[in-house]
Length: 295
Ligand SMILES: [Zn+2]
Image 1 (cartoon, protein in one colour):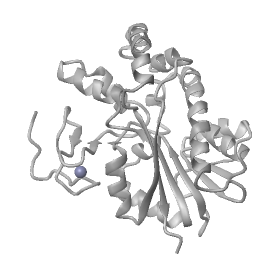
Image 2 (cartoon, rainbow, N blue to C red; image 1 turned 180 degrees about the horizontal axis):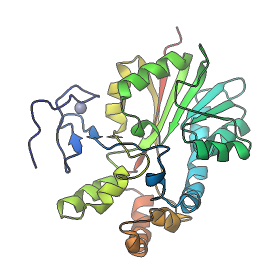
Image 3 (cartoon, rainbow, N blue to C red; image 1 turned 30 degrees about the vertical axis):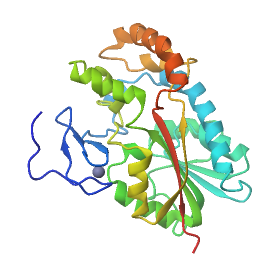
Image 4 (spheres, helix red, strand yellow; image 1 turned 135 degrees about the horizontal axis):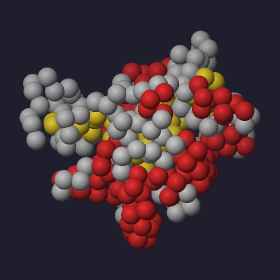
């Protein structure tokens, strides 16, 4: 591994200088465990979309997402009454969470920057606005709940983003982050495989070369440290299942190029490991809920 020059950026969570990671584009914080990637997003660019089989991705993710969204809404409902509460889903994709939240009684709005995905969500009747957070919100528009479902880790400047969340949260409002955990069994396994020379699974978890790669890997504790600097207090944390056997094959096979021929083998390995992952191994998805002060 090459040593990073004195220009190494500080960790966004704790301020320690980041160190070289497993790839040139990957850096880690030895103090708090935060991980960063210099991977370029390519939203609304046709070439990267051609690498993804959208129909297969929908099938692959839907059953897992629906299950997780029900559990997530149960969790949110323990901290805020849905009736009369405005909920914003940033990066709403197909609008599944917006519709589920509206079904619970929230006044729910989604934002989605990818035009084609947004139009698809709107056709299903989900209330989704095209564009980026917070650019397409009206002046002074605020919410009792702001949710990022697999989105926070895709946005470059976490400090700026949290400041924008603070401005858009009503007093006492909740920020809900649902995101991959650097402590999860799959992520740890991918790093182990990388050390043995097999880096494809590691690249896949960072979503390298895909339309919107991951730029950060956090876990609940360093996220709490980061959010505290912005005046957000942790009120709840939980784990969600990162795999569900229904739709798993489609989810593995949705990347068209590269190692797609390996999909059957990967599927078999995950099915074999499923009991371990389901009962006891550290989950790859963290949910953390923070509250803005009421005054
Ligand atoms: Zn750190």
